Image (cartoon, rainbow, N blue to C red):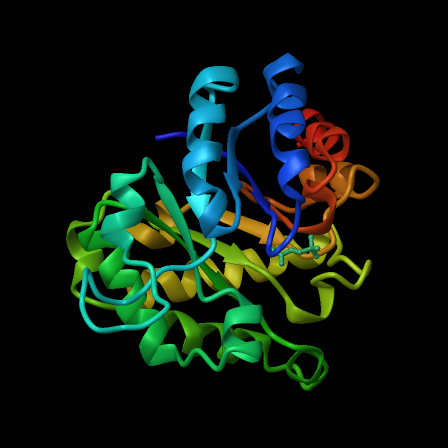
Length: 249
Ligand code: PGA
């Protein structure tokens, strides 16, 4: 299991004609640091899996979301079993955009986490507070609640669950958390993982940071953040910026 990750979250971006060029650039670059993972929109998955296999074999492919059941009458959903079948290895679960724009509840996110693990995927569980919570000094309690709500029996036998700390006020805003603030928050997250999940997660779960990560702020985050990698949105759309983050992490 790699212990450092760099995940590109394309969200609903990258035009079809840009896909091949992106992986050519990744394939031509040097090794960088950590496991590269690219999370394209669902429809691009088969093409991205093929491009990764042929041109960037050191990378892996993630989905941005999945359904909470292996199959059934759920119009518009994509099952984690289907993702696995197509060569996806990781799945982002509980991104704040899913929670806030699409109304995903803690209970639904817990079911998705279980369904992803049952299908053999490695979940990347996103947690993070908004500005009101941070200003009220309630970050620790808020994150503990999100961690507690995602706990399930499936965690007992899981090989790996990645946790991404993504403060909502930093996502897509150009305002990143400082390395020192991330380190302090990661300590809170480890404490809650050890308390509400099987104890080993407190020590071993890779914890990533996400929220306006760029080539400009990666050195502070890498030096002071005490983190195991990054989940990158905006800056991951430009292969040059994504590779610069990979080199600097
Ligand atoms: P951002 O997005 O890098 O554009 O802030 C991060 C994320 O939403 O995962």
